[in-house]
Length: 79
Image 1 (tube, helix red, strand yellow):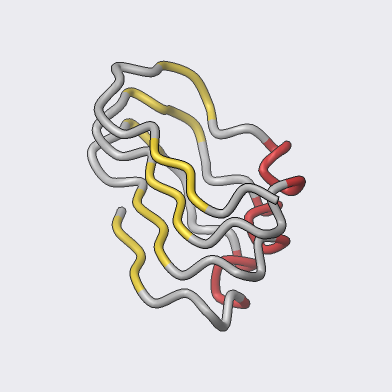
Image 2 (cartoon, one colour; image 1 turned 180 degrees about the vertical axis):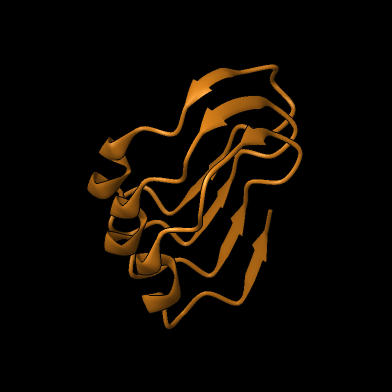
């Protein structure tokens, strides 16, 4: 039932896990200012409550997953 997850500015390294699909109640997800790499997993579309998503200042690459555009509650997306 996690609603807010802030891990910004912690020098974290790695990829954004597909396990994000388990955070279905997540409203605000901020992982900015780290060293995450790879792509944004398509499983992000299962976080149907998301209002704020901040992936800025990381090393992400690739295209945005189509599921991202299905998040009707998303108000702010920072890349």
